[in-house]
Length: 79
Image (cartoon, rainbow, N blue to C red):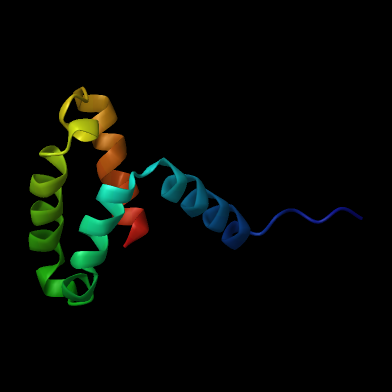
């Protein structure tokens, strides 16, 4: 009897794919805000700060709206 993959396994592989797509500069931005992100009440402000910093990067600055929305979801997944 074949077992279906657990949802946890799927989310781990999705997170791994997301991490591979982020540049080293983006990861450094996320790491610098990791401690602040642990406070759930301040999390939206942390996300805004990360987005502002990331938009200054060459890799991110030239994205269209769809690509940017996907990138923002990758940041949230990373956190």
